Image (cartoon, rainbow, N blue to C red):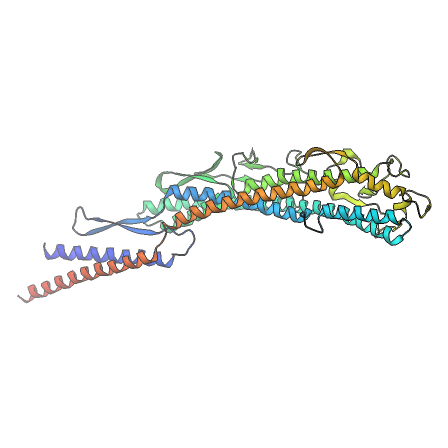
Amino acid sequence: MSITTALSTAMTGLTAAGRASSVVSENLANALTPGYAKRTLILSSGASAPGVRVEGIHRNIDPGIQASRRTAEAEHGGALIQSDFYNRLSGLVGTVDDPFSIASRLTNFDSSLIEAISRPDSTPRLNDLSLQADALANSISDAAEGLRSLRTTAERAIDIQVDTVNQALKDVQKLNVRIMVSQAGGMSSAAMLDQRGQLIDQINLIIPVNVIQRDNGQVALFSEGGAILLDGVAAELSFDGKPDTMPHMTQANGLLSGLEINGVAVDTDPGGPLRGGTLAAQFELRDEIAVEAQDDLDAMARDLIERFQDPAVDATLGATDPGLFTDGGAFFDPLNAVGIANRMVLNEKVAMDGDSETWRLRDGLNAAVPGNAGEARLLQGYTDALGVMRTVSSAGLGTSTVTASTLSANLLSHFSQGTNAAEQALSFAAASFSEMSQMELAQGVDTDEELQNLMLIEQAFAANAKMMTVVDELMETLLRI
């Protein structure tokens, strides 16, 4: 080996050691940085010249594990949304042991009726009956309004997520171009690849994606249902969000917006092209789960109103006179049943915050004057009305012939079952996501390994430096001859 060759070899070794120490330092500095992929320096022996050659930097990513983690993360995001919704809904209608649940309010109303029957002349008992009836009506209307608020929250979440996806897709498109230019110029694009990976993770949580590698380091993105999100040019998602939602507003009747990709309407059902992820979960919540829950609450409200609106129960009522429970103070029309749970209120004639004429609970809502203070026939009729077997139908509860108390118990049980099912789905999704995340993290930066590598790099640097020292001494010896 000539002196020139030895010098050149030592120089390439020092250069490689310097690059290697830089890579190790970057790995250690970003060991806890989300989305950071471990770097490895790629070296080769010089083909045309002696020494070592730096070929590039490799990002330690397993595409299979990364794709599986993204799928699990999207499923976990969707399950989390549904679980949160059902937990909030159960909080609105109450649970079996909740003293403020709809079922408990109905029980209190029934008990107050019995108390009033035993002393129909007692004004305090009639007043308490009014308060219990009002609490029952409010528990149903408050639950329905809470449900409407949850649906409006889903509407706003869809709007925000569509904007997020649109911006992220544009950013990925820009990074595709920059990565192509960087690689064409022989420069490292590892940092931009990390940034692009984080953007794809952000999109994937909302809409699960399949990542297809294209030439020159570019990628194309397709939803798992086959919709093109990015292939050269980013797609544009469109959604016309509403500031508020009402029970009668649905996507089917055109009062709520669907979703478009590049101006073309796409199916937002759970099995559609955008299936999985948080966006599909929010659409399912808004268009299916919340609509079904509204129908269940409407069925409960309608049943109670019709039980006490019947002139056969209160002979003072006309065919279109509002009963004890009303549709916003008016007669309930069965043809206008959607949203009745939100509008249900106690008749103002007997409401304590209305006319407060609680004697009408004993003598009839439309009675001209107070009647016999010892007459409990109407109060007994109210109690009997609660126990009548009536056929009730709703999307979630199905069709059944039940008493009022059985219907309220079925309502709470149905929502409780939905909550349990959602929590089980969330538990499974969380376990899968955690497992896949751990597998991906196992490919990340191991600080102990990096410190060992740093020691080896130090030894290589020292060896090449020693070679430079020897060459220098040889050159000085030759010059002295």
